[in-house]
Image 1 (cartoon, rainbow, N blue to C red):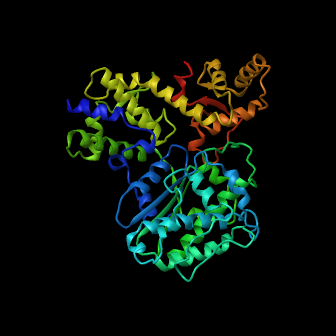
Image 2: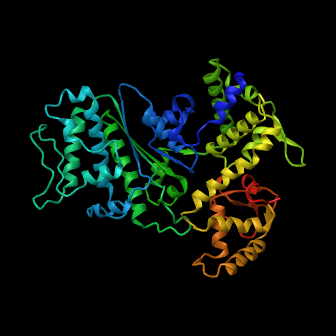
Length: 477
């Protein structure tokens, strides 16, 4: 009965980092330590590769001398920030002052929570920085950037007023005041300001305007973090602003300092070996949670899976984990979902371990999950994403030529003459490649997808293939 309990636990794994039991399942690898000790300040990776999981871990991991603010920019109205450009900076650096101001504010709010700091300040620091730190980020930023807002440090350093006579806020003066205050009172605690989900609403994946204010905001944020880290680390103060950003958005941030950012960045590139380590770790934690028994991580697989090889169509068998990952985008969330579905089927079949019958039975549900992931990611870019996927279904082949796609796509356009679509066949193919729906078939008959390509550029002269994880949901034989 213990094994069925373990399978039930696995069947309830969450793919949403915010719903995960980090205390049990967070996979702590060496790169995370580089953030914790201040060596790294940027985390770059594809969607679903664990950025938010790391952000949540940093935010929730509790120590008496650690303070955090997790700033989620999901659905954040970036347009509301563009008016705060500092004209003393040239583009794209005009928002550095704003970001430093925001970061200092959140650091001061954490200082107000630190009793060791609070006790040596002779004014009400908590009241001075009483903004909505636990509510919506939009409300917090709106309040601290409102016309006439004052940074109240009047009880420290002889009284500081940070508004000009005409009511316009003096961000430079405010930053100088907060910097001196932080330098004067900060102790040896660690203070994290975590920027996550900065890229949730970005849509122009194919034709980005790199001079757009959105990119200028991001570049300014990277530089603000660089300035603050360098300034305070030289003073022995542990201020640790950390940025989490999607890799393709980061690639579009063109700046002379970009190589410096990379030197302080963690790049989340997962491969089969790393994913195997992650899954074995999670399996061992699931076993311990249910049975209260320690299991060697290397032995965890055999406690849950009754097979090590799985038949691959009519071509013989392959390593079971390789089979599972071949139907993912090599992202942790995809592999977790696939194994979760296998556990669900094993429970339904009343099996004590997952076998090949269960793995085969999980194929449809996992493929449906993969399709939902694609639709969710593609919808902001092409609204009729379901119909475009239907074009692939009509080809009825996992491997196809550009002409075969063009013919089916034109059929779709002709049948939907009222459509406002202006994207060409090649543009649609590039989008599908960008989001890993399709890949190239090379001259050596290898499949290449964007997530495993250094250039992430589609070769229009090569045949194309549908991703294995989507074939079932697209009814392709």
